[in-house]
Image 1 (cartoon, one colour):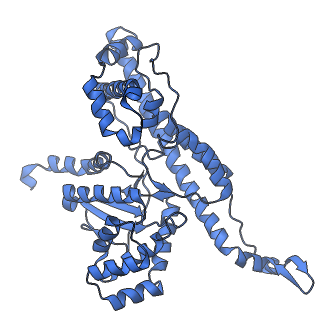
Image 2: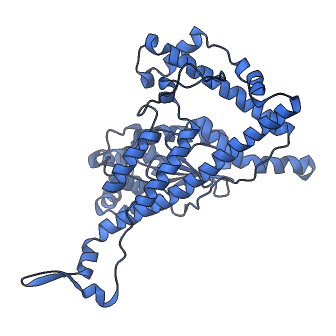
Length: 423
């Protein structure tokens, strides 16, 4: 399962000053690797297992920190401001402030506070959705850890050795020192992220590669033990009910896997995910339906909301995805005149497009998407739901493929069981 918390880069906004300050503090525990290097011991533990150094933690997020993130979000949710509920009846006319010649009533205050209360309500919905999601992640991570530990104990008892001796033989003893070529290759592939000279960072990279090697051996060994001991789990992935009616889509409505993307045309990470999703569509064909929903982060992306409206205006003429591609190809040119130039490039009916864009015809649809995303716990972009399973940030192709294949497994199994005769 993809760690959906604090793992992949994303554009983000924070709403509410108190929650913002709190989350800023909490994010130091679970922020993106480049934001907070860790402080692990580079020399390894007493048991010999390779440990992550500061640079290692700056590159990779540990599962323990994912759990910290989940707890942090829960704490933030408990402290988040709850929107005031408007009073009804005579209380609406109660004067809350008086001055010579007039007063301010509860009803007037309610109306004046309407936009702020709506924003607080969205914040509450986001926290509730994220609490549910992170609670499930805690259960998921700890179930995996418990099962793994019990399998190690069972196998150690079967061999008549301790668990530590088992791990030394099957894991630590197999981890080799990375070669200079391997260290250099990793450095070159991640030069921009590391941003330090190779000579200064080579030992940390070596430790990181050893740690990754250990994890690969461990995953393979755990898989062997699961097979040997017929281990199964029944904890289902957490799924959100994501509405798709009326949103632009590609692929058949009957596809077994539906991807719903919440995106922002001015977000650079959304461009990366858009490229990845194009590869997914080519790879899986009619097995995938892709649905696009807008989530413009107007506080940090001033052109995103109008760009979202423009894409829907193009969609009114059957060219949503063409406009979608043009905007992601030139994110630096999303002001209104550039949007109109893109529409002309697509040979749209310019009178209809300009009228649509100027009138704000699709502004309501964009706001509906924002509200829907907030209810689902979306706070930043890109955000992806794979058959309701939430993944946040610019997720690598391999992670999306892994989840899609999990979703397709029952169909693949059913097809094999039916046999060639039934086909």
